Image (cartoon, rainbow, N blue to C red; front, side):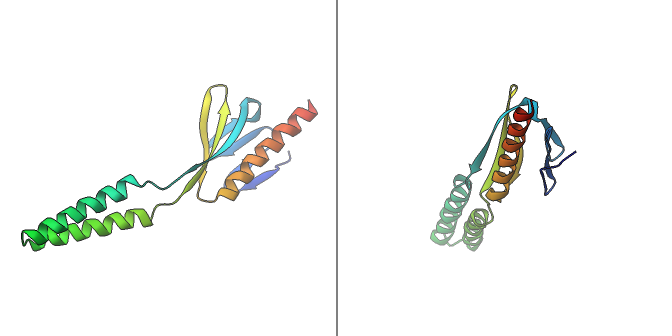
Length: 128
C-alpha cells in the first residue's frame, strides 16, 4: 500500500487520514478546512488590569503586599500573552459533522496535510 503522506505522526493513505489516534476513512470525508485560532486577548488583559488596580490600591493605601501582588499579576498577565501561540487546526467535514483532526502551530504543515487529503480523495475518485 502506498503512503502518499507520512510526517509527524500523521499519515494519509489512499483509504484514510490517521492523526493523533484518530482514523478518518476518506470515503466519509466530505471536505477539509484549515482554521487559524488567534491568541486569547481577554484573559491576559483582564489579569493585567486587575494587577494594575491592585498595585495602585497598594500604593495609595501604603500596602507593600498589595503593591507586590499587583505588580506580580501584571507580570503574569504579560507572560500569559507572551507564551500563547497562534494555532492552526485541520477540520474534517464528514456526514456526522465537523471534527478536529489535527492541531499545530505550523500552518504550512497543516496545509500540507489538507492538500494530501484532497489529493488522495481525487485519486480515489479517478480510480472509481
